[in-house]
Image (cartoon, rainbow, N blue to C red):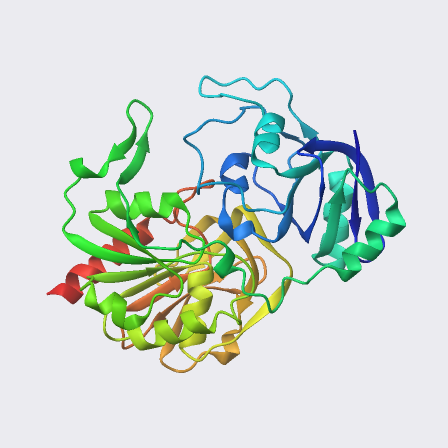
Amino acid sequence: MKAILALADGRYFSGKALGAPGETSGEVVFNTSLAGYQEILTDPSYHGEIVTMTYPQIGNTGINPEDVESCKPFLSAFVVKEACPFPSNWRSRMSLDTYLKEQGVVGIEGIDTRALVRHIRDCGAQTGIVSSIDLDPESLIEKARKAPSIVGRDLVQEVTCQQQYGWQEGLWDLADGYADATDIERTLKVVAFDFGIKRNILRNLTSAGCEVIIVPATTSADTVMQMAPDGVFLSNGPGDPEPITYAQETIHQLLGKVPLFGICLGHQLLSIALGGKTYKLKFGHRGGNQPVLDKTTGQVEITSQNHGFAVDPESLGEDVEITHLNLNDQTVEGIRHKKYPAFSVQYHPEASPGPHDAHYLFARFIEMLKQHKK
């Protein structure tokens, strides 16, 4: 079955349908990770986005029930050069195409992904549409131009949980699978805001000795404080942080009362709560190979990232210290407050997928909780 990917600026690509038949729109972005496509598919931060993989063959290790980061895929569509039809891995249960069909995810393969990525790098991420129903390029280009932008939309409300729940799973082990939280000594209580949270963040917190309770994005500061947490975690999530005003206000009210740690969207929301502003990047940072300088130690980390917005360093006040910088473009990758126990990073130390260089940040958070508790 044929399929077309059309961009709002008039460029289009013809290929073959992958996954579920249909038509969907979103912001067309690219991810440079060589592996971890299953985690990328199920990362809620990709809600509203058409994700293009730069690595040429995707799906060669199949799909298994363990390597998922949420309850389902949230991305708008999936774009690859070649989807491997015959995966080979001892944990594989089905092919990528079968999984996308089961989950109702529209995709396209067989296009020149190198040309698409170079176009996005030159012209910027933009709205596009993938269709195996309408094969008229001009019709699809017009639809892409009318599709809503990701800017100014509250996508968090569409991915957050509806009620609070506890987490009972630790980190994965080759021999035993995921650890049972009941076998882990958990002496600290952490409330985690679900703006589109990834499961491996929860696993890291649990294995670090935390009892983790996940709450919806709209949960008030008073409700959180009534739970008497030792710390609060601000999760990753999709889209533009500026319209998430309810979370910004809640974070502002929590400052100074309880230690805060934010990742990705959580970092942006903390920055705004501290008086900062954000702006949209030309094509964002998405992949597992972004170099980041930890200004505190002088160490360089290779990090996993997934975001299209960044914090404006000029907007941060004197009480906020920039702790991490992206070495590719000097964008802000981490901050801490000089008076309150609060810090955040733009990248993903849980590394699912990605390198493990930044795992120390969970230990840093745990130490902050223990010091504050004393």
